[in-house]
Length: 272
Image (cartoon, rainbow, N blue to C red; front, side, top):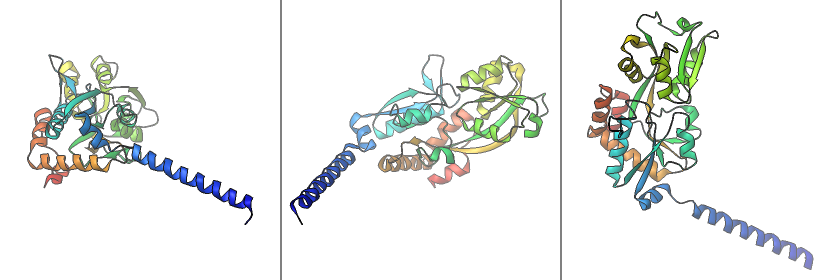
């Protein structure tokens, strides 16, 4: 082996060692999220406050709803300050991915598409995706939506489900948040809404003449806490917390307080 060959090998080894050092520094630099949250003594939770009864403002403009009280219970049990990060259906996941929030508790359904980009805890609640319309309208299936206009909220599972089944000659009118979708129905811009049953109740409270009711259920989805991928310690911590609070009934009490019904059996079995 001549001088130039030895020199080339030496340079290659030096580069390899430097690359290894850089990789080690990168891995070290990726702080565990649970440790970061614990050190900050605060957890930032993304919640849509325009989706009653999951998230909303009360008469004194305080945040309330089943998602809010779930987040409050989580923060209390973990000994952390709660910071609510207001969000919408469309930006819940982007807020998580860009570190604007640590977790998402915002009527977030578990779907295969979402599981590709974020992780989920075990389910802590459930939500039905339904088609609602005034009592006077004869709608029993997707076929009855032919030629009609349907409102949905962008980025929600309701939007995904109605898109799958809507006849080609029907129209979807999408809004960026549930509050705007509700306003459209209340103000008679449209009559048919792909949503959750709880929001139909909100519409009837705002405009009793609408007489909105569930026409048919598209799907029942499980709600879970959204987390960034690659955070096993945080996921394990939250899963353990959910199991404990399903078993002691606290999560069911929150759900029943705002939704008037017990949690689905598919959810409560996680606390057995």
